[in-house]
Image (cartoon, rainbow, N blue to C red; front, side, top):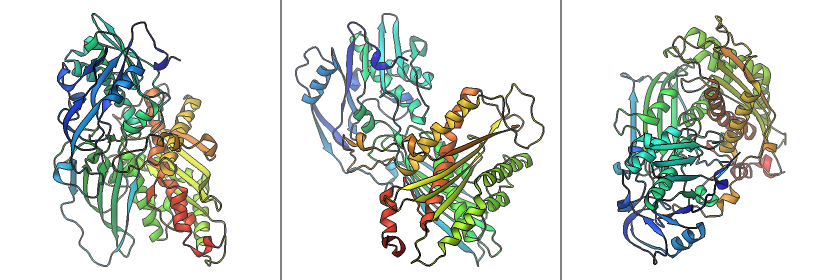
Length: 586
């Protein structure tokens, strides 16, 4: 397998990026040393649009900067070392302004996207019990096999862009826009892309623009290969989110009204350009549509804002922004079920939405079958009751406690699936110990087989089982990392450069025993049946929707305390448990 670092041709030049040292402010001056066979590309030298994919994000900052590390200029030199020395000798003066790092405080100027939805007549009855909480998800970065880079091969009749990217069409369109050319003038040579993880389909296109501009300017083949730390510090990451959700439940246990308020941190620029109108569009609309699509939650009132902060650009990552919403919804559903003293499987089966066209009788039967199968394989009902009873023991009795959590997903953009996780807390390191993980996933019937008339699930014996399992395991490993270990925090808009060596990816040896079971179902009329590559991508994404919620529920039950943030680290668990008499006595 050839990687970008393997590419080297005679006369090849090397590109590097001069970046902003400040998070926000006006560019006053950029002082550079004597050029010494160095080519500099500033915004004015871009022959096409200085806007990435026609959006609002500049390829190179023109008059102001919006985050630390934002590219200001492209430096092209005969060697990587010469480019690095030149950048080190540059001086950038910025008239700094107060930056925004929090999604809690913002102004109209900080709003990328807004969405509101409200039933025409909201329930106003009395005598209800309110169940709810505020849930938060963290920033995540996924290590690629190779740091992002591009080799722009120069020819008199055009450029050949050598890049590892899932969507080469995005790369071609972005480069053509930056060069002011037709897309047919830009050729793409696709290198092995590895696993698809959301923004990794978009970010390579941005780097390709820089390499292409460098090659076009100096009329030489140019390679731009980011360092590991450089990519970690400045590349787009999974957006952090905060959801406030509450439901009013009447004395008969029926949800009458649900209110949801969401905030997404898209960093300085939104890689998911959406409509910035009260009617909404883009990621927020997709998330809220998903939240009310699955269960009957009574009358709905929704509001959401995607906020601009002075951090590197962010976006949906693997699973899209929908995975944030499903994480919140499934934790909320388990919270409701616990408040009514009903197990999570029975409540979900009872409350599957009657209003959504996506939930035909056959779909409901399929989801009920998935829930029953997951409960049967994992022993969910029995264990949930037993672990809850253990939690009611006297505080001075030290009993090794476990917890078990469950989550369901069934959306137009996702495969129907259920996850169950059983876990406990290590009493030495206070780390989450996962004792079992069950994934029951429904896949559309293959075109190669006669459609199944019955809605009952069926084992897909003729599909490539090994590839399907591998895809699910890859996604599960990364989803558990997002839930438990992959923690990123910015201090004054900056990550320390060596944080990449401390960023903890979940090791395969830390994975619990994973039981994966596939079933087949017949899609609704008109619903497309994905080809194998698309199906494998959906299988990689499926764990992101359901594994984090099931994980958090399991640890919350084991600790007898509802945790509401991911990633949930050993330090978070210890900060709570050390205050509890039964645990501090250990």
